[in-house]
Length: 406
Image 1 (tube, rainbow, N blue to C red):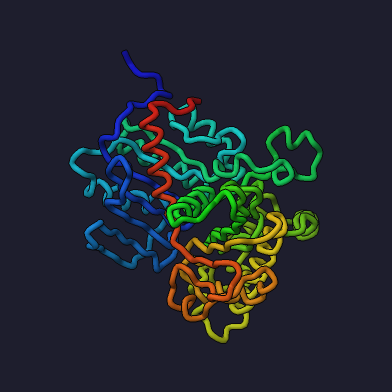
Image 2: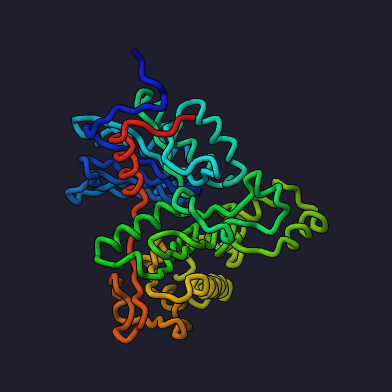
């Protein structure tokens, strides 16, 4: 008898392949073991640019890297899946896990993606037009390569599913909220990993008021209380909150009405402007990559873009601390948060009133604890691992033997 589409085999055998297909990069990893451990990693970065980067590494430390132009996501996915296939352990794959940015109100747990579920996910593309098409391309590519394997979607919005009502509401006519127009929050897989890492370090999550800052090409912050998300800077879409690599962040809606009516932009042109021509690349006129901007010493536009980013980050930390009723810990993660010491220093430069004070030596050295000894609030910088969280969700789903069906 064939198994219903929503029921999975209860097994810990086989490895888990994870695909994290983003707007400008794709990461992949293979995890083996019941408590999934990373066996192989690969990535394609700066897709569509002449200096694209392709790399892979094994657990034993061996690695390959090259710089080459990667035309689009289809080419990047083909390269990664070909590389992953060569590294699959002898017991094969048990499932493929996927990061999917938006689950809306419909999906708050991992989802087994069959054809019906794929159709429902495609209806969410307008909510995250920069990410959802790429997420779905990853699922389609993996299904084509391994048509009999479970494809399991893990949503960035899952972590924020329990947002307090005040944090979820938008001040629009209630009929829109009832139709799903609300604040959702993103980067949930990253925040989940941060919390697990803190818990393993002995942090009492039930008592601490924590602000976590996921800063990268996409950027957001989250207020964590009792180990739960109680507020976040991103809302209905991945546009809101902090300025990002190419996305605008918070903006007066009147500006959008003006651009539509007075500047004559079409909806498609406006969407392209907000998602792909704004943020750091819009302000600097040069690059969406913070590394490029930090390297442009003396470039006024680049300096202004960095200052604006740090100002808005500092402003959001203050607001989240107010929601929490105080601040007990500040954590930086994401590509910028974990690695850009200069950005962390600028953000924290005027947060003494919250008890935040950095140690210049620790910050420059890239240590995990970067606050000064006299700082009332511990400040940490750590790598995130969304792929690890996806692998754990997939393993848990396989062990349970079922996921919500479409």
